[in-house]
Image: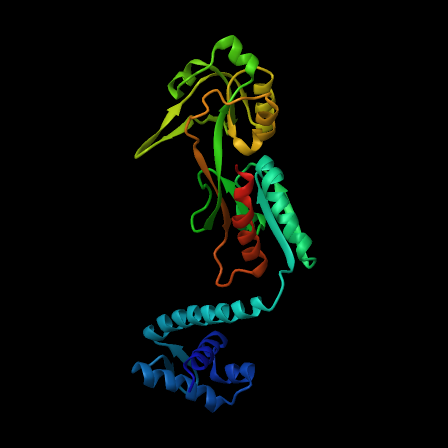
Length: 299
């Protein structure tokens, strides 16, 4: 007998409560269900089910074996589904939550390209900087930057690294001086990002050591990255921002990097999803597309 088939029959008999019910559900005879269970018991050398003329009950070992069989069968189904995915196309609704600015500037173009290539795919994008609960809020996928926060047990894959750069308007630097070293930044005015009441230090990597942390003087605290870039371009102080966000300002000269050789801290960007025996094709293809295309937006 095939062991996986016998496991499936055993699991169905346990879940439905009798050999007769399992036989009806699986299109087998009652004696054949019994043969599958006896095959497992003889192979294992342990009784799985105590059977009488009136009832059946799992043994202690049978209960543990039942849980293992459920996992084995789920993995076998997932493995078979992989082959089916190779012959299919992503379809159905894909719900993704992304940070507001990073999502609009970098993530959305990648996912729109995916949706354009696969018309059967429905895209539902939510732009929010709050950390959502994927299960409670019904999202298939989240894209997050920086430290991973939220419930434990999520699956995460790094899809890009975002470079942080210190920048300022030439007018500000002409008035207050051009810093030449990272350590001088703490003496300058800054426009800083604050979310949930916290102002994070600016980080600068060092070889083999923890990064240098700088908290410059700040009287302007904003929770919108574009607004920080605009305030810095208006000469209100230094800003520490993702390079992708200020690429246009740097190219136009409205912002400059006062310390060109300053080490740029790399914030990881992750795709995050809930664990499942078989990851749907639409989620897997979205994650692969992000990992392939997002790094080009980070330069």
